[in-house]
Length: 223
Image (cartoon, rainbow, N blue to C red):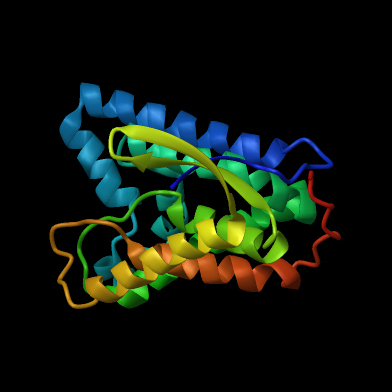
């Protein structure tokens, strides 16, 4: 299931969400240009600014933050930013612009903490905004469990549009992360892959932090 849009309106323009999308895209364009001109240097930048669990003991803590704004490729970036655009505006609407930015960064940091705790000896750099965006999804499912999401469902060679409850879409997403994360615990992770526990940690952090940050009341649904 790939989400297209939801049915929850926003009271304010999502300036913070749009700003985060622009920032992530700008940094990726710099990454992409660096990769084209100096592949070795680009790989070194990922090693320096990506979150490497095995190097946390050396005091390298800044990658918990910097890794959140780097991406491994166009599909990685576009997928993350698409989810942020669909679900971020409503969470930002509940928290307010400034609180949303704090919330987003906190979820990203806690997501990276989840990845570190699951693979403390991994020497593979982890990059991406997925932990922060997972936090947005966690806050959304708490805020709007009865919302409906228009999704694309592939059926053989055809694409089918369907309106599905948000609880089903995001609940199914989280179950996949949890199952994949459980499987990954028995693997070394030496060859890279998906940081499933960053997603899980971010999602749970978003659910927990939403009410701590005293959100505004929810809007009624656009029925």
